[in-house]
Length: 208
Image (cartoon, rainbow, N blue to C red; front, side, top):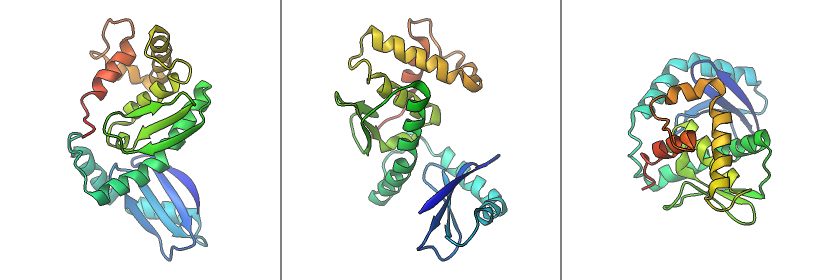
């Protein structure tokens, strides 16, 4: 299977996937609002883009319905967990690799799990685990969790050096696109204000 990314101005990122098993073009909106189009190999990617544009109104309505669901609604049927796992495996490792490359980190491997106790973890061997339920929280909190685990590659504990590094990463990362301006009123006067504000926001979301 080969794929290409199309960034729609209203829908956001759309994954165009060519499959030898596909007989027609199909568009799908996942549990977290992500959009993908599956198409036969002989069909040009432009046809997938045209399909997305023609169904934009429907896609936006489905995405809005998904956004209105409470973040506390985490009781998922087994089939929904598997769908979420598929989305997480497609998104989380790729996003982690982008952040690691951007900030100069190197990890051994990444695994997507369905843990009950944490959003992510980093082992002494440099292996990072990410919870598939990160797909149920806003994108900036996913990034925060990944930056948190990447910081553990240099500082395994939660000591001052760890917090200093995480705060620096958060300031650098979330200052892009004026993301910090949207956190006014949330950032405290603590020693690590940005990372603490993000951690506090993350606690509003329950794993189970």
